[in-house]
Length: 156
Image (cartoon, rainbow, N blue to C red; front, side, top):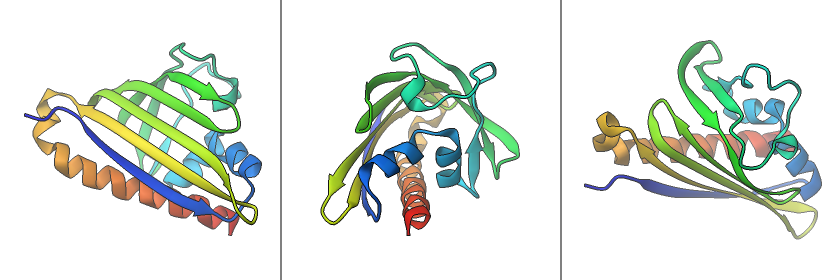
């Protein structure tokens, strides 16, 4: 039985790459992309952080995910494994629901002061959720589509 799934979401955003990057690495920008469906709390004690300021390879702690911004339903034990500031990050984490979660986001300048944003997500559900993998893949791909639409709307 298949144990992990991957999907890619790519969009062109009407803004310059430095401005898009500055938005997507902040808790405010991340939460704006996720709204209204969910939000993600900064791990306790993390202070005023961005992805750019994290220590690569060092687990940050549990970032609780809240349904509709209110109801905790999962957590992301965050670790930024790779970082190319201004261009790319790769998160490799575990979650309550996932044995493994990898999210790679790349921000690439495009023509006419636009930016291509690409997310590649690979996930491996915990044993009880493995059978739901194909459905989770569709749901998560749709959610990342929502995130890209929210990001595009911010720069529209």
